[in-house]
Image 1 (cartoon, rainbow, N blue to C red):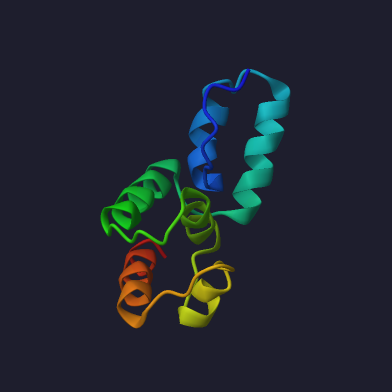
Image 2: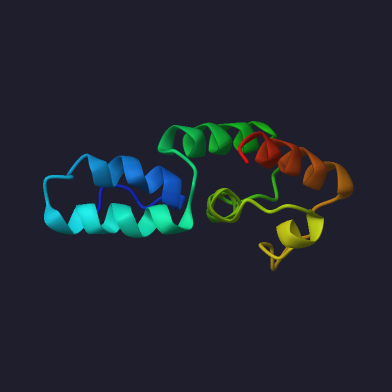
Length: 103
């Protein structure tokens, strides 16, 4: 059953998966996700809160999830996430400063 239609990063999804970890499939899924992310669920949630607190109107929740998943190193990598918008220098720097805190 779908309770909420909100994009999550891989790190954040671990919280929801671990809640039902008694199922064998969930254990396999946790192992799969750990191959692609080194962030802890708590860190993913904190990062989302910090990026959201920047109040950049251009950012959508799915784009924030991708920032958390990909942890871009520079402006070029960050801009690859966005297809419809361009971040200005200040916005990009603020986001990259937050990402650096979690690397």
